[in-house]
Length: 201
Length: 201
DNA sequence: TCGGTTTTGGACTTGCAGGTCCATTTTTGC
DNA sequence: GCAAAAATGGACCTGCAAGTCCAAAACCGA
Image (cartoon, rainbow over all chains, first blue to last red):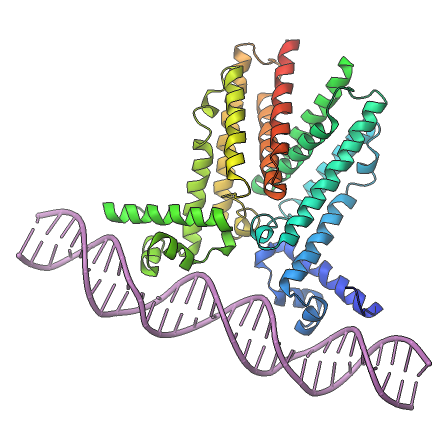
């Protein structure tokens, strides 16, 4: 798979992925032509097909993976350490901050349905991202339960699923309306309700 | 605007929109060619451009509006009458049922970012849909507050925003994972938390 | 230094899908 | 019934963007 790639080649490949990702974030997936990527990264068509023999399809997949990883990385170190209430709030703030800055430029947008149904690969990347994301949240909830900061009778997985869904919807609404209000509301209210459960316990 | 459209013309136009919508639901926006629509609806290219002078762009917009209206219509009469707890639960059930049936075939998918940034019109349609949707939920909450079934100190608009975001995210996760669990979780937990507020009051 | 391999540049091909055009048929209003 | 307007069918055009190909340059390990 990763056969025969010199250091230089590796660098070029990375440059292509990063450049394509930037371009896509800026103008949307299906507005980006290979020529745009070439111009933006200072590469030739020969290079593109050299590093991505499957053409645009393969490049898009690589970009998607790159962006998916980035989404999670941007939430660290909070996401992996949801062990106290301040940590949860810091995570919340990071999310707001991140998406506020991103605005309507969603890197993974358009990967569902469209490319998603076309390429099972894209579907897998998104599913994988969601899976990892939810797992981290679930672990956070479990930890809080173990310290008695959240109600023990709460279904951690279900609560994490709901929170994840809320976040996704908040982002989606940010994309369509340009306002971050929904994301803020869903984060605050959901986290509050997790907190409320603890008082009972 | 709607100048010179005989009954027959009206019917043909409607047939095109409905057929295109079906095709798009089935195979995704950018997998559908005008030729597919022609085949599926038994129309010719001349007709397509006769009824949609702006070409594909215009047709897509019409389809989007059609689907957006459908989304809300499918939630009636529950959505406009969220006046009792049973009504809320019936609405919840209808949503699950509707999206369960729909599965991964999202009619409005791909309208964000991509076409969304390309056509301000598409953006407007989605925004409008969300706006109407949230308004209905807000009204339901307000009504429940007026009868004392929900806590009066609750910010109805904010709660509605959060619930709407949750639904959107749940649907998005249905699209990417194929499982309806997230939607169920977010609906149940969010509605429960609205209910919990009332006990305090 | 040298042979093989990777990297690079860019001209060229190709298929396709959106859009144009017009000739023909059907409908409408009077 | 008849002219004008709308509806229909389908051949044709056109541009673009993905993908192909190959020859030249840079690079690597002995």
